[in-house]
Length: 36
Length: 428
Image (tube, rainbow over all chains, first blue to last red; front, side, top):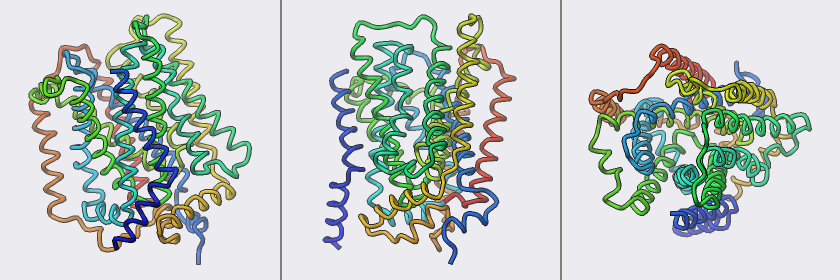
């Protein structure tokens, strides 16, 4: 069970479909801090 | 055994037509969501307005949508595809950031410059759809042209309609900051559709996705309000003590969540390249509420009226172009490849996911609604009723005949869209 969870977590963290929106969320936070 | 395409042919309505109906219904409701916010302009910060609306969205999610599919169904669906909760939370966070950035953009460069920049979000979505999910791969040239030109036409028309209500835009002292904010908003809102597509390629039900989405949205908007709007001194907290005004923002949230649900169904059955531009025709309905109910075009000159007529015609033509671009078998094969990628990566059953994607209901035993579902609906509806009883109508000139007519359009769209979805897929 634990191994399966680790496998899913690894799949998410190496998925470009996750990395792109996650990076954009971070860009959004930085933008908001800079623009505020 | 029937292939997915053969199965689809047995139904009275194709999934493409259903997606188009959902996209257009979404536009009607998303456009109406702007109207109630016009009744609240009593010195609250944009963060406060946004936060109250998002709380309204969260509460509205638990009103009648809970009757469509109860909590047992929704949580069983989320449990079957647990990994997608991450994407739904990300999408909610992206919406909250994009919405806040639009506030900064309008403040610093005015609507006239901010509009064209953030209305490009559906084109950003179209781009990500092609790059990440192979949308339009294998499509014949005619369809590619219809979708791309249709999306560009709708984005351009949205800008024209936006301009029609702008009278002498004000550019602040920090123009570059405003432009950066508008571009950022476009990037946030356009990227928000990546999680949408991801979820629906895996066969998730939009009701489940929106449930987690509202949590991400509420968390991010609360954090932003607290950190950027003066902490506990934010006017948001003052607003929550004024039920007379709060009702209108909750009502806006209600309209928004209905529109967003249909937008998600459109993304599920059409993909983001086609579904999002269609639901972005909401600008037309927003303008209808502004012009017909609040008289925003009263005294508009020739130039502004030309923008309204031209923008409306271009938007309708763009929507027609996309609506008629039915995916070919080659394009559907590319979608199947994208589904296969998801199944391989996250260990999902390909047959099951493909059937869910086609609107088949596979959650045996979780259809029944439990007693607590009715309690949730009663409590959520009760909050709306309580706020409604305390609502204060501000002294603002409104054409009540048009309020009635446009409200009738909302009801007809909801009934038509709901009937088509219920009959064709059982809201799956």
